[in-house]
Length: 189
Length: 176
Length: 148
Image (cartoon, rainbow over all chains, first blue to last red):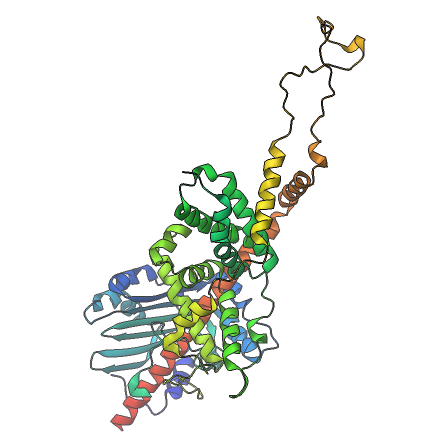
């Protein structure tokens, strides 16, 4: 458990100020290795948006007169790929940690910095960032596992700190209940 | 067995017209297409076995023709989602607004998802039946249903038309 | 009255209930069927009728012999040329219009459909991302609070 930091923002600044060269591209990870996770899932969200598809999607985000849409477009313009894999299971034991292992091994590479690692019982959440030389982020990854849910978010691009803030903000994105990966943690309410 | 075409039309006209209307969102085009489908049925009346067969034949034909028609024409919703007016305060007619809003949201779904939702909730078809009709895997049908419902619910909630016990996570400053 | 989420599917059934066909729809369909049937009856009954050429003698085919006396001569009413029939003309115009629509228009339609789907996928992905980032922050702060 990595605890004891007073401000996560401080950590982010610290990470981003590291000079880094030769970063591995976030999109080098082969998401097909996660397919096994969904074998017994009752509910899945499997979203891959990169390259042309991402640009195409951005073009349909609403007109620029809408403040939220403009904010959203500015963030998406900095993204190269958005990968979401989220699986819900009807009972524990329907997936194996070994199925998540390829991703964890990938994120252990020096290019990735683990800034959040929280484990509570059988739940765990890790957040990784891939900093670049000029105080930007080439990648953001979130790995969240619970006995009946696994959610992986993987974003590549060239983001700055404000983009990261916006990704966790509103931006006119609706709260879509019922999707895997969008279940509020009761403890944090 | 003699098939009475006039009674086939009488029994199925609402189904055929309504499917086309919900999908294409245009009454004139929906009627035109519905008429074409009945004419197509008439030309192949020799292959129609009975009334039930006629119904399923017509349903399949109007679904596929509607999808083809959408690809040929350029249909835009009459108003975008951003332009739908905000709900009135309590004491107004929120129910009608909500119904219109929900209908508009369904009509704005992508074509395959829209057709799946229409077949499920207008025709009460099971996912396996929808899959066979639209010639897609059952898992795809279920995925369309699930994601469409989630999206519709989310957008209805966002517009403040629904009370829920769980409020949205508060928006604060920096996350990380 | 606001919508109850638990009855969401009932509301979908309600708003997607079948709508009646427009008044006179069945009559219009049957009228088109009649036209279709009429269009297939192009020629009158030709029993007991002999067709005779009315062209000049020099154009008559070799071996032509005049008809025996008493043969009935009738004028054959030629079917109306296809381009004079409104339905056929409309059909031909429709086929021509469809045939000459540029490929780029079809491509635009496909692109629009793909774009709408991609936009929905993006919104879902961002909704999940937001939730996960917020939950990670909350958990980290909660952990930080319990260890201080």
